[in-house]
Amino acid sequence: MPNQPTTNAMNNLLVSSSPHIRARESIPSIMWAVVAALVPAGIFGIVLYGLRAVVIILIAVGTAVLTELIIQKLRRRKMTIGDGSAVVTGLLLAYILSPGVPWFVPLVGSVFAIAIVKFCFGGLGMNIWNPALAARALVLSSWIVWMTASWVYPTEQQIFGDLSRSGTTLVSSGRDVSKVDATTAATPRAAVKDEIILGKDADWAGWQDLKAAGDRPADWLRRIRERNKTSYIDLLIGTRGGCIGESSTILLLLGGLFLLFRGIIRWQIPVFYIGTVALLGWALPVRFPGGTAWFAGDPLFAVMSGGLMLGAFFMATDMVTSPVTRRGMIFFAIGCGVLTALIRAYGGYPEGVNYSILLMNTAVPLIDRYIKPRKYGYVR
Image 1 (cartoon, rainbow, N blue to C red):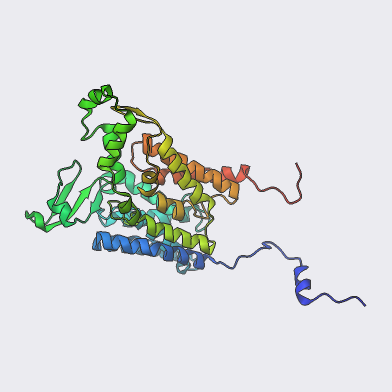
Image 2 (cartoon, one colour):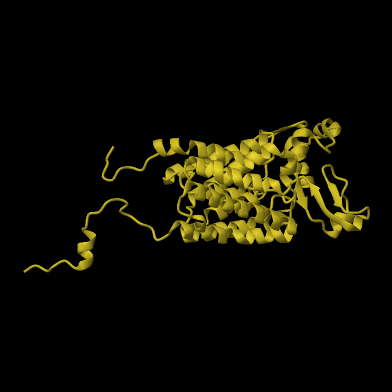
């Protein structure tokens, strides 16, 4: 008599309704893992910017959770605020805000992110755009002065050194310079772009003499970057001006690697996104009052400045608003990188991560429609 199949073998032959493959991860475990990955960068932002950062983070996260609670109460739906999705949205929004914004900016942004971007499309898993980025686009268009100001707590060298550069303002409660509370200044990206594109603080009158002496546009551009650029160490650690949670490249990278190790995100989006920005940041021609420079960009500066690391690991990889196939993810990431580089080089804003991801979020349904996995057993 033939051997009878074991219990496990019989279970493998059972036919059931889809889905046939189930992951061990749940929505709460994924969301709280993302929160854990974001915490180190947030702590660094609090150390760098002080109580202002704490207040903005608490308002953004608290308002997001409260808005979701109220909407679910009104709709008489099951409470899901414990899944952590509202916390992630509020935290990401706070991280991409300047610590100098008024208290109502994170409040309005969180309400818009949850009530409009998330629940007007059906709730978690149904939204077209990343809620935090869509909220930032709203508050950026509404309060551009506050949103584009970089808030930097001063060191002794900043207070008593050369603070005469254009765009730097002392914020103090008294007349004594030694009691300065903070300085506001252009971010590293904004400072370089202002001088290259607009000619601020640049001696363009002497350009023809330098050109006659054999100085190339690339040499002139390199000197502009060196004069305005924060050092690589500052960019890596995060001791620079910027938004609350986007400053420290190394902490965001470690958080992203944690998510990759957990299998929560895939490597295709951050790798191709960052790689595209680095390549185009080096190769794109830069036109400025002194001439045009090709292949004169700084790929490391392009990668470590601005909000690229935060966007590449924590926003572009959002499972709801990114493609489902690996080829689709690569196409999506390259599109984000191209748009980011173009906005940075030729757009009106020094940073392009926000709008590039939102624009590619809009294209995700088309990407999923035309880039599909090959059917099992299908031969062309």
